[in-house]
Image 1 (cartoon, rainbow, N blue to C red):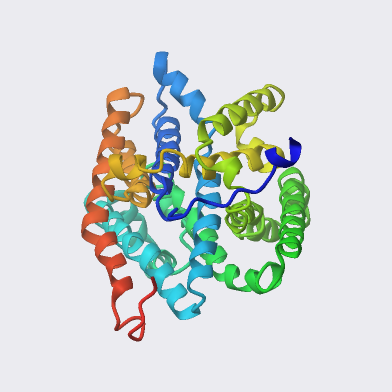
Image 2 (cartoon, rainbow, N blue to C red):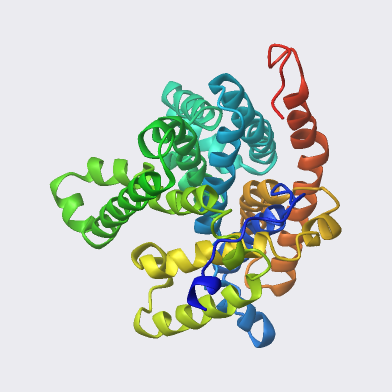
Length: 385
């Protein structure tokens, strides 16, 4: 009986792994980040059912969910098409067009509402011009976390777009993945690749746990080193690795994952609730508790392959998750600068405008950019499938 229960069942014939709910789950993750950011920064005092929603969302941290999904999907993409040229072009088309458009919108808002910033820049003379130039270079390259002091003191919440710190982390993962493949799974048997993947994940988690709990000690030795580690891929790579492990073993785990999302969700919430009773720092629960991160990762992937037509029915092919993530911070800053704080109405308006900008970004920037993946000019006559 046990042998039958744990027998590996392959996916049914005709099963399409590309038919999933990842777009919807990414939108949920982006919405979680936006809800928390906007609510906290506008000092919204939630009550009633909104307070319940706020507390519920603490169990589903958006950034780790993004990282798990990224690990799953990007490793699968590289497996399907190992051409590094095509891989790089695909990643650039996904990240940069919308990111650059959001930077231009930020500049437009600063031109209209950033009088204090421009006054401070003019007072700094040539140094002020250099600060703006460095910020632009950072936004258009790989250092979107850069936020000069002149911006902190003179506009909005002090961060022009605080969510963008994850973009360099994501880009580092894109760079690291082609190196990880040959080391951890490519050309190896299933057993050997899983030993290496799990071993690497445990080592990376140990590093992350140590850094989180001893960050002050690291800062005592070197503040620059602590900042460099915090902005690097290292504290977060184990989360991407969990997505890779699930992707590499999705056929073996078919019976446990596919169509079982509700069961995993209930199990995850039960464990997360118990853990939350002993750890009152939600921001640490998911990066210092490996069991919880594993369960969250499994739940996300299982939900992606449960009721798999849900995303297509609700979103109609419009993937607005990235836009919601990168635009809500801009709208939040404008609302704060205009004094719209402590207002539920302002909270709702900021979220609605963010979703509207996300849809416009998808229709006018992201979708056209992604359509270039089929261009024979970019892919030497052989666009990726």
